[in-house]
Amino acid sequence: MNMQSERNTLFLEDAEVISQEAHPGEQHMLRVRAPECARSARPGSFAHIQCDPQLPMRRPISIMRVSAQVGWVDFLYKAVGRGTRLLAQRKTGETISVLGPIGRPFQVHPERPRVLLIGGGVGMPPIVFLAESLRRNPNYRPLVLLGSEAPFPFPLRPSQILLKALPDGVIAAMPLLDDWNIPSRLASLRGFPGCHQGLVTDLARNWLSALDSQAHSGVEIFACGPHPMLQAVTTLAAEFGLPCQVSLEEFMACAVGGCAGCVVEVNTPQGPAMQRVCVDGPVFDAYQVFPTQ
Image 1 (cartoon, rainbow, N blue to C red):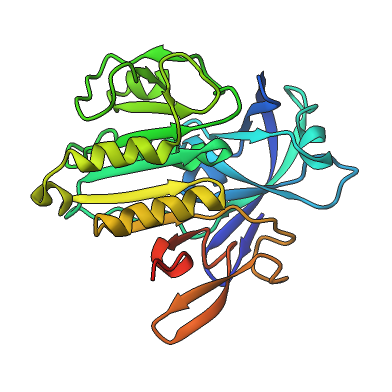
Image 2 (cartoon, rainbow, N blue to C red):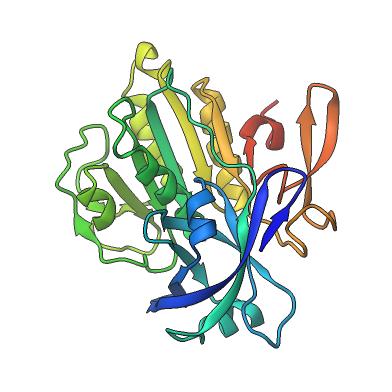
């Protein structure tokens, strides 16, 4: 069933659960068969999912990976409330109503091929999606930095890709990214082995500080995570004079722009304006959402 919003085409699908994997920290990886969503999804877009037939209110969950050819969509989420805890109980072969893809995605620019991707917590999925979309384009050179205070939802593995600009001993990587030949490093205050023992923005600062001004002219930052992290990323981007896009995480009711329950204040050339994260975002220019002056 096709549904046309004012911004783009949405698809309402009865999606079959292909797999559901539980990870430490009440994190779950859900794969569903939703071919229309898979064909149209772009890095930064999300879906509005009915977690259980008895719960009418849907939950917005970022898309982590898709296969447009096979028709599956992956979601990484954390079970933190009634809805996502019910979703975590859904079994292989069951059907879940999926509305998506929704929202304004990330936009990469060929004149800035050194792409710095920063993800925090359940903000990691859009970053992984963006990294995968760039993996076969030789014009881009992505670096992925991920931070989490929960256990990472994947095994930590020493990276096979050398990065000279980061502290000694920071060698843990996301295996999937390493397999794609995309360099990644991890940060946490929890003391996980091989991770930077601090904030993910510390790693970003180290890497940016090692580049000269000519290299900075080719860098753009993309980030998704909690608001304090996005504020810190925006401040860091401003310090180095870099463009930055952020994907916001907000509670949503309708997710198609009708209820205006997810509005945020955005600074536009015409002055401050209230915009809806679901359809005007979730990706915004960082400086419009987090002014640095």
